Image (cartoon, rainbow over all chains, first blue to last red; front, top):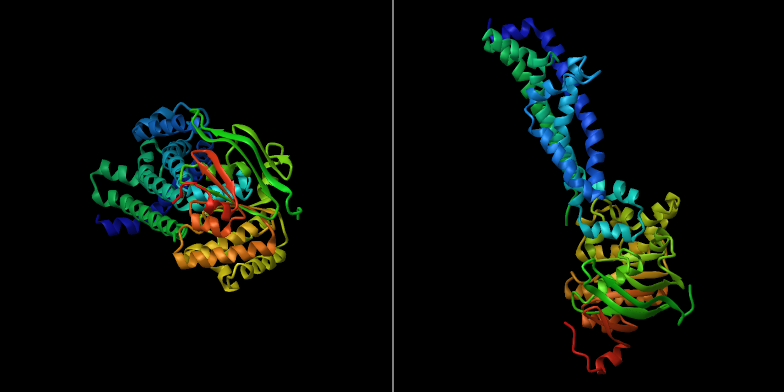
Length: 212
Length: 239
């Protein structure tokens, strides 16, 4: 069976798997953003925490993905469902770029601008949401972009633990030694990564502050 | 407005040392009187900018006491203190992500002024500093250096603070624009009667603008004189 026939005959399944893939990636990025950005902000305020937090996030990043899925298997509640497990693993992988870019983005805001804001009597909170976060937005978005594109790829491996997603087609194709099946999983995943990259790239550009 | 001659800012034997013990300012005693422009003149590293930042507590002094309107800066509520004092630094202090209207109206905004009052105030200030109202929707990078600096002064004046702290505002401008702005600043000050602490390393600027000139060198006050006295004193000239 050639590639196009396979796609045509299995379009509903491919669509479902794409949705599963998208859900895994989407939920994990939302979770990682909800945890990573506050952590990144926290370490700009508490310098003593900066090294330990970055080190932990770095170490997580170095664990091979299959091994991480394995490690997380005994976790209660999470381990019961493969999709939960995959989401947790993807969330953990996405933390590093989010924490690091949030930190770098805020630290990169012109010191004169921050000082002017303080001198004008902005509270810490006002400084953060009126000045620092808007000016760091493009760098933070670059972090989300890296995390998102990486996650789309990584999520294919989640099929190895039965979490579904487009990886399922890739693994099936590998087992069947059938390139058409592999491509039916790989191409939508690649398109998804490209689309995410383009969208975030556009947002990043929109939020880049103009300089004189 | 406080009466002329009354002290508005008072440095009483103030020192500021870094954590390694190095002194940036030593035993500074100085009074800024209501309605005057007191210029802190010195080379870079003389401690003049630090002295300025002690007043709105961007930097906390190590010893001595600073009184603003008779009350120690340590006893002031820090946000109240800062909003009571206009602060203008070199043009880069404008927020690049806010348009000019929002830059100028930020202190009124955080003080919860109603929107139309902020808009009216912004327009009033733009006229005051010689900018046209159409500039209010532009962003700092779309303005010339001189326009940005005018906007910076307008922002410092936004909530009508009685005190202004100004740090090297005209440094980055071409000589013609600079002398225009200096002259305008002087007439503006005459009109508004603010109490100004003004930092510069430019001797001509100090002579032109200062009611009195405080010369700082390596964290110490060398002399405190009026401009004519300064010219006739045996002080080495500062670049």
